[in-house]
Image (cartoon, rainbow, N blue to C red):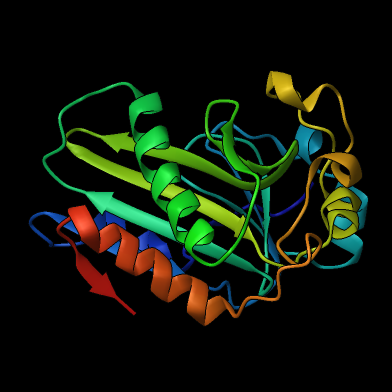
Length: 210
């Protein structure tokens, strides 16, 4: 057995927010951890004995999607939208992922594209995954951008997912995941954060949280 912790990372409070419209939080995880999607099962998603041996904390978030690694080498983009009518999740993935693509292109990152339902790739390798949680009229978009976390670390703790997008084509983590650093982009996370906030502000009204 492995302990699954209640999701209490920095963006958890967004679902309890009293904001009237929207709130955006772009943050760097304070420590290395694993976060499973709402329906995730540890035995299926994790190399459990390695996770236990290395004492890696494991959480379960309210949104769907596959299991992810968070660390100080990633950047998380969390966006809460209130009074949002029910629409296709793909619409939101496309809209918000395009904002991140635009921000990264503005920093000189090339060969970016949307892939699968909710990913962003550089060429054919994944650099961002995202998920959505819906509760009545509330939408929470949650994305993880890989700045410099290694594919080896990810594969060390996460099994090959039971479900995968078609473009993955069965590739293991080491051949599927990349990072900005891997691609030769030495970008300060604070700079990336500021550009993402700027892109969001261009056509979204929200309360910016530091």
